[in-house]
Length: 114
Image 1: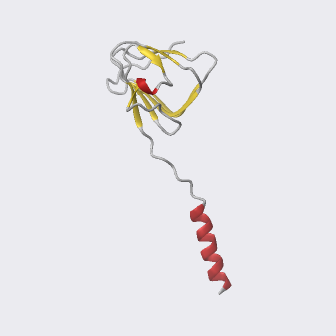
Image 2: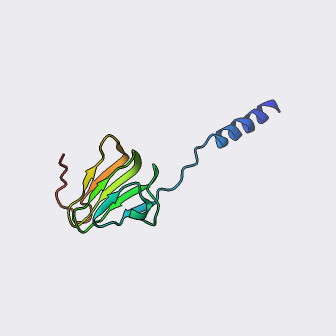
């Protein structure tokens, strides 16, 4: 009988120790001329992407985006017809923990410059 109870206890501990992960939201930077990455007014739907979220940039022109503080995101997807944006991060950091995708829609050459 004690072995059966031990098995139930182990199963319960395993179940309780599972990490509940929030599903990543796809958020889109909407300010065509740029602005602060951390301003919810620059995002659709008016939420700044968090660590589990995907930050999407589909701007038609080449905006300047600033970081007023550090931020971590799950993925960064840069698919603007302009080819990207200028990032002014300063002393802050922008950590992308999974993928940094450039020009996914057009399949064109990916370029990064500093």
